[in-house]
Amino acid sequence: MAACGEDAKDRTAAGGSKLVAIRNWGIVLIIISFVMLLPMFFVHLLPWTTARKVAAYAFIYIAADVVFYLGIGLVGTEWAVRLRRYLNPFRWFRRKGGAGG
Image 1 (cartoon, rainbow, N blue to C red):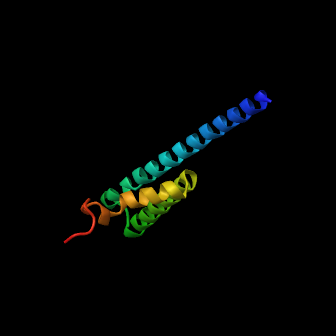
Image 2 (spheres, rainbow, N blue to C red):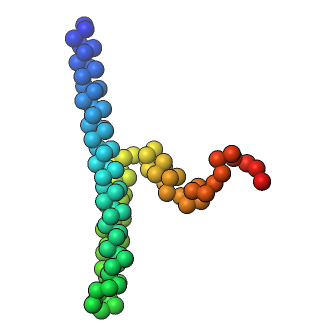
Image 3 (spheres, helix red, strand yellow):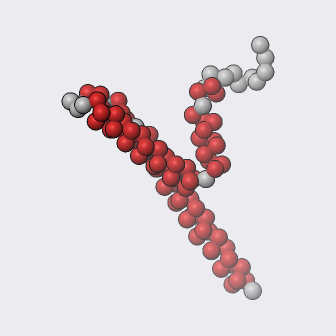
C-alpha cells in the first residue's frame, strides 16, 4: 500500500514541475512580446514609404500581441491578473495608507 502512495506523490511532483516549466515559458513569452515592441521606435527612421512603415507597425504590433496572449494562456489567469495590476499606471503612485484625504 505504501508503494502506491509514493507513486502518487512522484506523479504529483512531476506534474508540478511541468506546470512550473509551462509557467516559466509563459513568462518568457510575455517578456519577448515586450521586446518585440522595441523596433516600433525605429521604424520611422527607415527610408521606406509611408504605406510600408504603416504595414511594419501593424505587423510588429500584431505579432507582439499574439506572443503576449500565448504567454498569458500559458501562465494562467491568476498570474495575468497580477501582471495587469502591476502594469496599471494608476496604481503606481497610490498611497499605501489606503483611504484618506
